[in-house]
Length: 426
Image (cartoon, rainbow, N blue to C red; front, side, top):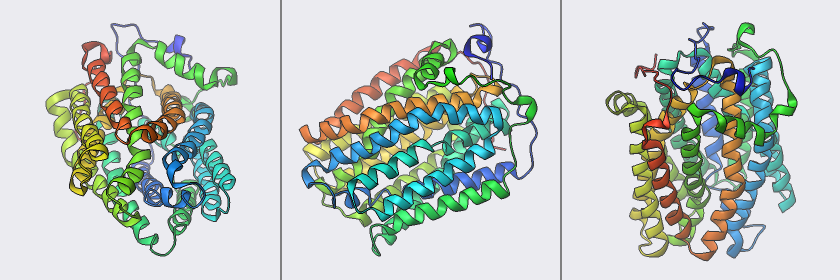
């Protein structure tokens, strides 16, 4: 892997992003299947996590402890992600993907067994240290996709993720009627299935010619990776926007179940149905509309427009928490937030991927994962603390951060890469 200084592109030239190396014809269909299963596995447990945790902590500190568990997971992912991403640049995507998903399976089995709060904490540590599956899959996509088609394929994967987000919570809500731990064990089983598919069937996407020939572990400290990414002129504004919007998204993910429990007295089944609705919205935005929106408004226009939807959703959630605790307001605000998030994230991923070279996709994915994990280390704890102060505070602050991110990314300098986007996913 070339260092950031060696691969830096002059300001008036596009980043070196050659066309993807031809791969096995099954690579793209298998990546779709693995992404779908991964999203189902992650979202099956969403409806039950707060309800499992309240068996071990007081009701008054539930939101804070949800944040603690997510913060521990994010800290471990923050430390591990640069290594996993760069290892995939050096040795290929497939072995890192297999190790990551099997590690997640171990973590979820421990979480399902439970028995004590420390067991839950250890399970999140294991899962965090092996949390390299999604960054590696996005690097895999970059390997097999020409730069001009990446945004559309990111959108297609996002749409499939939306289907998983719809199916996963619905399965979790049903399994929760059996026991609260049943969705967690189902997640572990799906992780094992993904590991087997990746180990036996999935072809390697990174050819030896495109692999990094050196691996300097001293350069993989997560703070060094993040600072190196921010030093790249073509990435800086995109990364600032990514950071700002990651905070309110973390607030939403970590607080929506607790907010539903407190404001409208929902249980796991209702929360699961709401999150399934979020998945339906993702399908519509990313699967049906994203290509047309990118063609009409450009990637940056879709990013900013998506942030407007997120802003409206945050304000609605804040109103539910304080002034109008109505189920239809909670559902509408959540779905509007999801609509904005879906289009914005896929377009932003495409912009960032097209700004680096072919042998840096794993480096970028690892750096983004570390940056996201750095936010997740603090945002859930902050959300839990703010929620204890005022149930609407996390979402009011989130709305302000989204507005700032939209201003940052709306500037013409937010993307130095002039790569044109072909909205067709194939």
